[in-house]
Amino acid sequence: MSNDSFEASKARSDQVRADIAENPGKYRMLTGDRPTGRLHLGHYFGSILNRVAMQNLGVDSLVLIADYQVITDRDTTEHIQDNVYNMVLDYVAAGIDPEKTTIFTHSAVPALNQLMLPFLSLVSEAELERNPTVKAEQEASGHELTGLLLTYPVHQACDILFCKSNIVPVGKDQLPHIEITRQIARRFNKRYGRVFREPVGVLSDAIEIPGLDGRKMSKSYGNSIMLGVTAEETAKRIKKSPTDSERRITFDKENRPGISALLTTAALCTGRTEVEIAEEIGEAGAGALKAYVTESVNTFLAPHRERRAQLAENMDYVREIIHEGNKRANEIANATLDEVREAMGMVY
Ligand code: TRP
Image 1 (cartoon, rainbow, N blue to C red):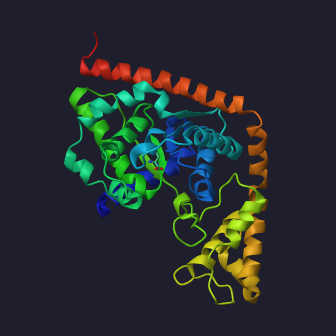
Image 2 (cartoon, rainbow, N blue to C red):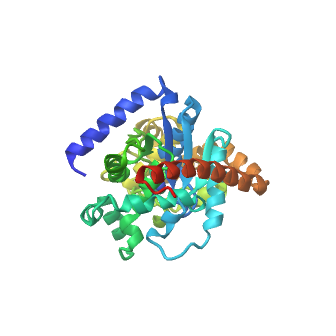
């Protein structure tokens, strides 16, 4: 994405962020995750906390479990149901309230998916080919460029526009998708008459929590701490994380990615700063640091894990949350699709 358009996106994001607390009723938020595995601390600090905050401010909120996006760059839907239910467990344990926030899966909302047809007609092949996020994802996965991988940003536009959300909290990597969504909304309105509004991608200023090895936290790198695992598994994962041979603990992201990632993890979980923690551990070395990180993470996650375990005792309730969410999403999507048919003159 060009600098210019990044600056413009950032300015829109800042403007909305300044306004949300004053006028929460003006906004409908839609955001989502791919159910490819369990949610980890990166998701928690990077997005879930922010969703809970918006919901509690009174922003009308929808959270999408983007199950069709799973098959953009992989050839199986193995474990998908389990992943979806576990995602609901983590959402609700983290404070997403199904009474206030609609939690749904897009495969259960036919009218949402049907928007894909008119929307595909509004973008060119060249625009699809230029999307930097799609390219990066294709390279990272090593998967061939399927039709769905190439066009999923348009599908994501369906996710965002079906419910006429006007704010979409996202990381920077998702801005190209917001841009194409805005374009689709504009082009549709121009061609057929006004149906959609242009959503704003809202960037968070949360620090990105690195994986335990200092790279991006990702399930595929095995460097993440899942919210739902036990304290023992957490300890094991942290124990195995790479450090270096220098005894004294210092915060230096460039030269000591492993040590620094551990410090950031503890900092987020305790509300302290990395430098403060590094100075306190000092010459005690990586072993002492790891013990401190383990304790910080496990203490921080204990209430979440307890709520999660309680919820998991009643899986009927978890299924009910998805059913209710899907029902509401269908009502919204059907109403929007009716407007689209009307605008396009396809009413028979
Ligand atoms: N593409 C997003 C991700 O990989 C997930 C997602 C799907 C999404 N649909 C969305 C995010 C709509 C925001 C809005 O994280």
